[in-house]
Amino acid sequence: MSDAYTEVRAYVQRIVGTHGGPAPAAGSPAWCDLADSDRAKMLAVLHAGTRAVLEDCVAAIDDRRRESKAAAVEVAQAEDWSAVARRVRNRDQALRSGAYVERRVSV
Image (cartoon, rainbow, N blue to C red; front, side):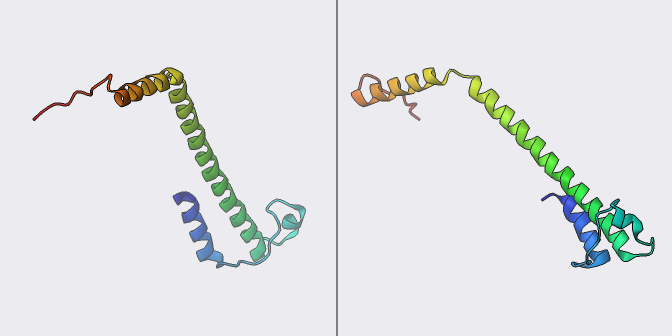
């Protein structure tokens, strides 16, 4: 994914281990009923924070993908591609028939 998510995930894993155990969703009624000292309450908050960072990273990737697509569409629309294809076809046909001889610079 991205460096931000990887860093946050690694930090959370150092705190709670790779398997922190079950925890209710942060802010849910079950989470609210937990004592502040309950490990599951903190684990739920850490999980929610990690997920938020992941969602931000995915959104950034999506934004870059959209920008890349927009640039590709702009390039595709910038040229009359049927005219380009016609020129290439005509040139190739002229080269094959001998009607056109490519210039070469001698050294």
